[in-house]
Image 1: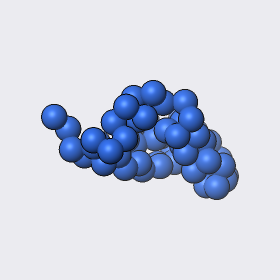
Image 2 (image 1 turned 60 degrees about the horizontal axis):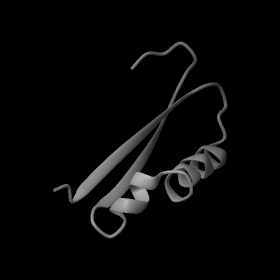
Image 3 (image 1 turned 45 degrees about the horizontal axis):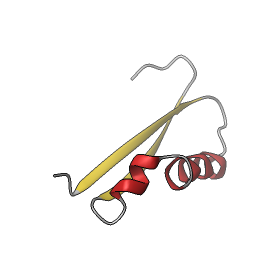
Image 4 (image 1 turned 180 degrees about the vertical axis):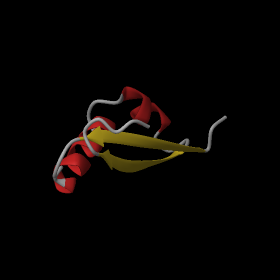
Length: 58
Protein backbone atom coordinates (compact mmCIF):
# COMPACT_ATOMS: atom_id res chain seq x y z
CA UNK A 1 0.00 0.00 0.00
CA UNK A 2 1.22 3.49 -0.79
CA UNK A 3 1.74 5.88 2.12
CA UNK A 4 3.21 8.77 0.11
CA UNK A 5 2.59 9.90 -3.46
CA UNK A 6 4.33 12.77 -5.23
CA UNK A 7 2.76 14.21 -8.38
CA UNK A 8 4.88 16.43 -10.61
CA UNK A 9 3.05 18.78 -12.95
CA UNK A 10 5.03 20.03 -15.96
CA UNK A 11 4.01 23.22 -17.77
CA UNK A 12 5.59 24.68 -20.90
CA UNK A 13 5.39 28.37 -21.80
CA UNK A 14 6.79 31.86 -21.34
CA UNK A 15 6.08 34.01 -18.27
CA UNK A 16 3.67 31.51 -16.78
CA UNK A 17 1.94 33.02 -13.73
CA UNK A 18 2.73 30.71 -10.81
CA UNK A 19 -0.47 31.68 -8.99
CA UNK A 20 -2.56 30.39 -11.90
CA UNK A 21 -0.54 27.19 -12.17
CA UNK A 22 -0.98 26.58 -8.46
CA UNK A 23 -4.73 27.18 -8.80
CA UNK A 24 -4.96 24.72 -11.70
CA UNK A 25 -3.07 22.07 -9.74
CA UNK A 26 -5.23 22.68 -6.68
CA UNK A 27 -8.44 22.30 -8.69
CA UNK A 28 -7.14 19.19 -10.42
CA UNK A 29 -6.63 17.51 -7.07
CA UNK A 30 -9.41 18.90 -4.92
CA UNK A 31 -12.26 19.05 -7.41
CA UNK A 32 -11.59 16.86 -10.44
CA UNK A 33 -9.43 13.94 -9.25
CA UNK A 34 -11.47 11.08 -7.83
CA UNK A 35 -8.26 9.14 -7.09
CA UNK A 36 -6.99 11.93 -4.81
CA UNK A 37 -10.36 11.92 -3.04
CA UNK A 38 -10.20 8.15 -2.60
CA UNK A 39 -6.68 8.29 -1.15
CA UNK A 40 -7.47 11.20 1.18
CA UNK A 41 -6.48 10.11 4.67
CA UNK A 42 -4.78 6.94 3.38
CA UNK A 43 -1.72 8.35 1.64
CA UNK A 44 0.05 11.70 1.83
CA UNK A 45 -0.13 13.36 -1.59
CA UNK A 46 2.37 16.09 -2.40
CA UNK A 47 2.73 18.09 -5.59
CA UNK A 48 5.51 19.82 -7.44
CA UNK A 49 5.18 22.35 -10.26
CA UNK A 50 7.94 22.48 -12.86
CA UNK A 51 7.95 25.06 -15.64
CA UNK A 52 9.79 24.69 -18.94
CA UNK A 53 10.61 26.94 -21.84
CA UNK A 54 8.70 26.22 -25.06
CA UNK A 55 10.33 23.38 -26.94
CA UNK A 56 12.29 22.18 -23.92
CA UNK A 57 12.15 18.43 -23.42
CA UNK A 58 12.17 16.43 -20.22
